[in-house]
Length: 132
Image (cartoon, rainbow, N blue to C red; front, side, top):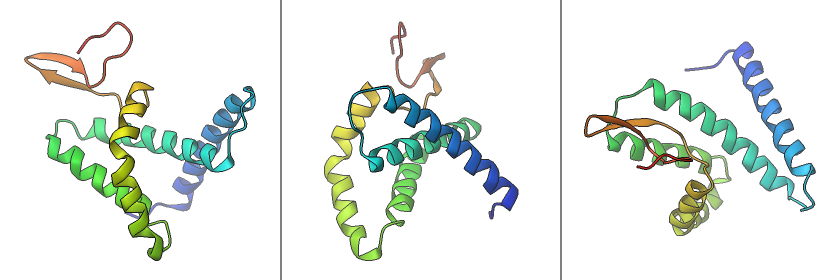
């Protein structure tokens, strides 16, 4: 699917709004955050919001769908790098994925969904008073 110029403008506006919020939040702190980290956070939040909507709209699905989507999204992001650097990035991803994933889940940086488990709807990740 090709996006129209109008859709691209809307996405750019959404991205800019996300960037302003992130930059405002980090400017209030004392720590110096590298621009590359801020850009990664902006992109991550934008993509997470987009994926959350997409995944919710595609419910119900099997676990294989999540694995396939994760592989496809990671591959797309890696494809943005020069071809001669892509194997290096794949190795870096594979080396760090488990640790970084657990850190992000603990920090609440997740796609939030509800699943039916034993006839009850439960969140995929417990938040606040919820217990899985």
